[in-house]
Length: 486
Image (cartoon, rainbow, N blue to C red):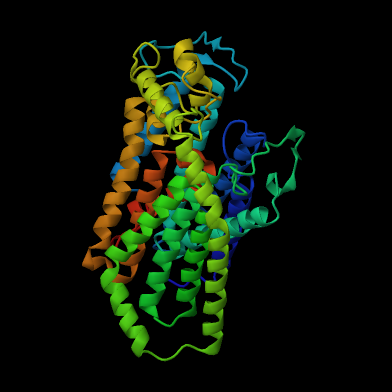
């Protein structure tokens, strides 16, 4: 299906680009208070993603003319999302208490319907996160519809291009030694936090930037291999290969310890999984027509830039690695391995305590509010700082969503990985897309590994990017079986 000349498709991608630019540019659209009016920016990003989802549902082409615009989702995915929405709504309706962030005062609810049922401890915040879940379901439907044509590749490509933008914005801040993101000391009346060592613009936390960029690397490599199979001498193939290299330099420049480690693991996985095709491509390249002067020049310039930026940013990464291990025993803050180990254990103990939280969880988005009140004074002395995140998304998910809710979240991610891995080796699906499936599998596994040590899935921009990948992995089917709901 040809998309390039369809004005509806062009309009959709313009709307998507605006949403991505704002969502990522607004400090990654984090939650809580980082001195950047984070909640206000996240709320705006939620609205833009909802507009994008609705635009895609009505503008992207259906399988048949006149078909109902909303596509069918796989039954298991529908069940998991339905349980999460029902769980979240019940948690709000049956709210036990409320607390506004950093006010540190609980307001007991007078309308608890069932004491035994799920009920959030932070009603105001949970309403925002359940609304966000509804927006993400609309986004899932939009991405699912994109798989009825080639639009899904455009969506992936847009996120890969965002990786290039993040890299250059972050490097620009490092080159000019800027102490604040965008050089703004005050943002909407609030003083911005001054931690140049820990941010990688536009993200307020360098590890989140690295996680975003690692997935961008995987997507770029998948699109590069896809285009190489179509035309080994394609300029598009080389462009996506350059995109992967630029985003990889961004990961190194971000100086995230886990991010750099996962980057190298991803590249090793690519080299192993795609080894036969890589060897075949090298042989074809040697015996193929010579590259033009323009292409050779472009490749040379890109390689020089990658080497220069990689070499200049590597010392920062090494410095952070050394500091991280030196502080392992002496410090217990969020930047150290020991601090994160202690907090993970405390969060797990609280989540397992039926009297403090129980099987139903503290409520969507409740961690930053509830965790300080659910540990004893003696336990709080084991750590320093106020922890807005557990620096372990799986355990924080159990803390907030309970056992059933967390199981649904985990199965959504695991199901996507299993299905994409199956499609990768399914000969009936066509060899071209297999490269993209493998890349998405590697990228999502890498991000999931990173989430054990940090909180990438808690950042809205990364959450949206990951959900786009997950939805494509769940819903992409053979042409013969694609159909819209009617």
